Image 1 (cartoon, rainbow, N blue to C red):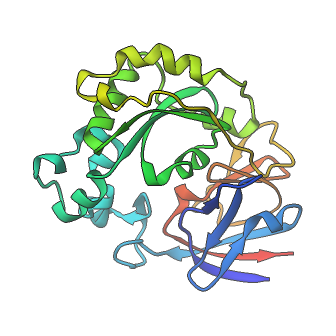
Image 2 (tube, helix red, strand yellow; image 1 turned 30 degrees about the vertical axis):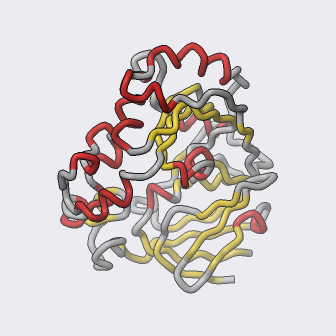
Length: 264
């Protein structure tokens, strides 16, 4: 089987285990079915996710000029506390910003390599947790907009990490934690503006990934430097493909690359 198309982040379905799909414009690949098969990846060219041109990808699937222009790459994406749509103030595109920012957002705890605090749109639960490779997660606050969720995250990360150690996540060097207990400890630090949106009571969500063999030591594949790779697929976790020889490939970090994929 031979496929070709521009990479975008894998689509997922919350199931037992998580189901993964790769959308390559003209092909839709159910990746769980490829476990134990040999997959060959070849870098073909670049294709910016905004302008579509063959320009080197700068970040998040965009060429450099698009990255500094499109609203999908504005600073408030990574730093929700910088959101301004609730003030009717434009950053790059007010209509887009209102659509994205002025909707319910969740502040959560997730355990992938360690317990971390994060923010996502309510509509992205549990997709965000899947993308981070979290094996358990719990909501703390449901805010009506991105700004309130953002300032809550800023307050809470004074007391707990907001980072994931992706190498630990991929080697499964993690322990189960009592997220409800951590949640209770953090609630007093929620800012006054967001206290009314604290979720009174809820349970942890558990996630199970389709991995039959975790790498002992992670070797990250860079298709720009090594444009040809072939390996036996042994797992999928977060946005990573895990191969038998300890190679891992971050699909999301390679958005905007056109690749040829063969399966045998």
